[in-house]
Length: 113
Image 1 (spheres, rainbow, N blue to C red):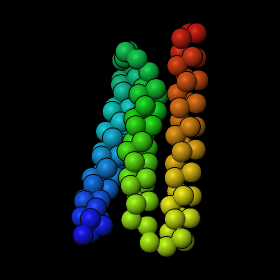
Image 2 (image 1 turned 90 degrees about the horizontal axis):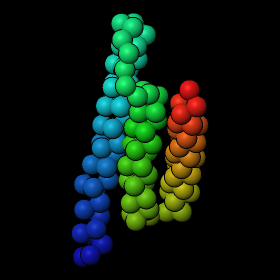
Image 3 (image 1 turned 90 degrees about the vertical axis):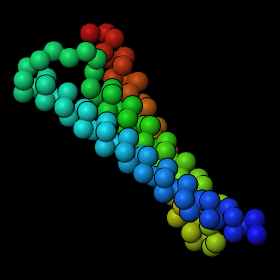
Image 4 (image 1 turned 180 degrees about the horizontal axis):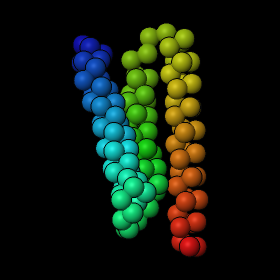
């Protein structure tokens, strides 16, 4: 009975977390593109750095997606599913690490200017 309840809850929570990640990616890329257009096409000065904002959005969305993947481990039935899920988690963790590294580099470079 508890297993069924958990599966039913997770079947709602996991897609919501994935949608949240999709929303964050979409919003941050559209916002960054708009700032990019302001700077490059309309030649307007803007506050901040749109690359940093975009990287923050991507990192945040990866955190939502990773949360969904971690919750999927609860409902895994076979070892092959667990291996695939583990590979996805490792890849997303590497992407998150690379984005955070790039973000730190961009912030340090922006401070020196």
